Amino acid sequence: MGVIALDVRMNDHDAGPGGAATVTAGAALLARMKAVGVDYIFANSGTDFPPIIEGLAEAAASGIPVPTAITIPHETAAMGMAHGYYLATGKAQAVMAHTNVGLANCAIGAINAATEQIPVLLFSGRTPVTEKDRFGCRTVPIGWGQEMRDQAALIREASKWDYELRFPEQALEVVDRAHAIATSTPCGPVYVSLPREVLCQPCTADGLDAPPLMTAVRTAPDASALAQAARILAQAKRPVIFAQRGAGSAEGFAALSRLAGDWAIPVVQYWAVQLAIATDHAMAAGVDPEPWISEADAILVIDGLAPWSPQVHRPRPACQIIHLGGDPLYARFPVRNFRVDIALAGEVAASIIALEAAMRDARGEAEPRIEARAGEIRARAAQMRRDALEAAAGPRAAGITKEWVSLCLSEAIAGRSATVLSELGCPLAPMTLRDHGSWYQEPHSGGLGWSFPAALGMQLADPGRLVVATMGDGSYMFANPVACHQIAEAAGLPVLILVLNNREWGAVRQSVLGIYPNGHAARCNVMPLTSLAPTPDFTKVAEASRAWARRVDDGDQLGGVLREAIGHIDRYRTQALVEIAIRQ
Ligand SMILES: Cc1ncc(C[n+]2csc(CCOP(=O)(O)OP(=O)(O)O)c2C)c(N)n1
Ligand SMILES: [Mg+2]
Image (cartoon, rainbow, N blue to C red; front, side, top):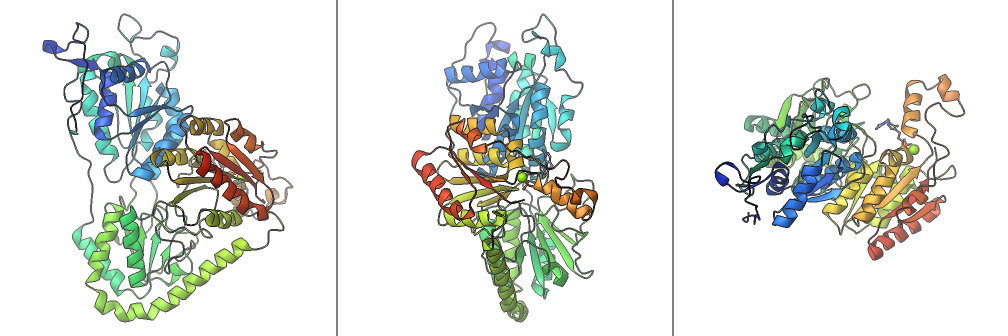
């Protein structure tokens, strides 16, 4: 880390004890974020921000390195961008919001981040406590209107740790502690509230670029649990893997591919929010726990909050169940009673790699069992894949299906390094995706409005990559699309947005049919509380921010339009949107 060049003013106001160089606590906070590795602050400012904005200008004027601060016109988008940026880079970013009201708008993003173990450094201002006679005191009525008894309570359930900055000299330590806690296994968001008077005060400029005070905690599975898990999987006749949140990294992804292939263990990606194995891998066993779960004598769950549905899927009583992940018991959640015979608690990728190594010793002895099942599993997995592709390509007389969009999109992006996000958008089964980081689905917390801003964050992290966010019409509207298109244009982020428009909240309608298949609601012409008709012309929403936009009603034209959209992105590096009429 280089020495920060500080152009520090040594006057009465700026001088600390003994005349030491000082900066405002606001500037110190920003500088410290850069020092711990934060690249971006996704900020939505307000009257609590003068010391932050002044701090940014102070840093720029003084040559103090600080993260790039971007104006984000809605907090949901700020949280989603921090989420997406982390998925693309593994680096925690910061969100700064305006007092309690901005924080309230961050809550859905914090819930999503907490559920998916995404570290985010979340800050919001705190309305001034003092009413007069102090620098930074209340000056406008909202100083009173935005006061809360316990501001952090707004998101405390979703944050791993929270704190309110009390003194300016705490700025450095608080950022270090926030970052270390957020990025410790299992990761998650943290929150710091920032009273305006404190941010306005000077603090020492010493040590702004010193190494972090504390390091994040990374855990690895207990050696005996690892040996036991390896033995169970090696000795099993019908082992199966359930992977829900990917394999942790490109190395973890490669290790899982080898492990599944070498040991002939099918990998089920039920309700997967990240890709763990190529969809056309010989051991990719589709997205349905059946028939695998009822046959299994050993199950390895990799980072799965809800790896199957206990109401529907029943592992055999004698089946041994191993859970691997940052927190295999998911202690944040009051109720989660999947059986855990063995817990492999630790970083996902490192744990998979360690498990693969631990299984190597038992290989020779396991050979006959592997031989016995390999061909049969390969044939069944291949048949499942053929069925999924055939069904997706099937008749479309009643209109375009989401599966058809998956198929067309897969073909349009084939051979490119691309990431597809789906928020009630393209289903995974018919997609052909082969790499770590090529697929993300909405978090299991389901706070909608996630995929568009997450795509923006990913694109910011990796400008050359093709990032495609596919989402339902409802999900698109939840994302505050006007704000998201503004960001895409302002920040030059050439994302491709596919809006799968069925003019309804189809998932809500389906859940009513699931519980009351023959009820009154099922017999209604228009089911209450599910229709979004008439939907706006979404291409015009995008065009308002000068995006390339088309609408597709005929499924046969979809492939061509997608290629045109990608061609536009390649050539002009600006955003594109395709609205696709989907059947209900
Ligand atoms: C913030 C938020 N509000 C409400 C919901 C409840 N909800 C779950 S799915 C859904 C409908 C999604 O509609 P759309 O994106 O159009 O997808 P479709 O089901 O129609 O394919 C709703 C409203 C939610 N998950 N998140
Ligand atoms: Mg819809």
